[in-house]
Image (cartoon, rainbow, N blue to C red; front, side, top):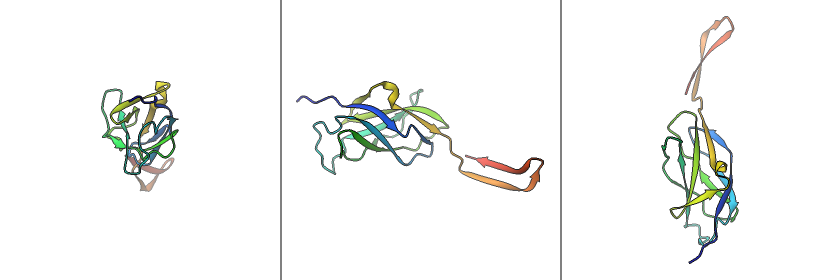
Length: 131
């Protein structure tokens, strides 16, 4: 059977915390193609890929409701700040981004705690960050 080409054109947001969470909205066209619009069917998934080839676990996107929008979860990234490529798949077939740079996502390091020391430094409070 023939299938119309599915193309991803952009992602939003373009960056997020390395702790992951939230969702990634992928805009394009042809996302429902010949896939059934059934809530139990999740035909699309994403994998995040670093320039050195490290990857995240595949995560299933939400079922298709609109042929121009996909909503996918953002995985936790185990490295510090890093620019990654979003690899989008439809039933294990890679969906291309047009242009290819449209699939870039930036993980930013996140501070997980802070500690104000009890004494004053010459410039004010000492602040200790960890993350």
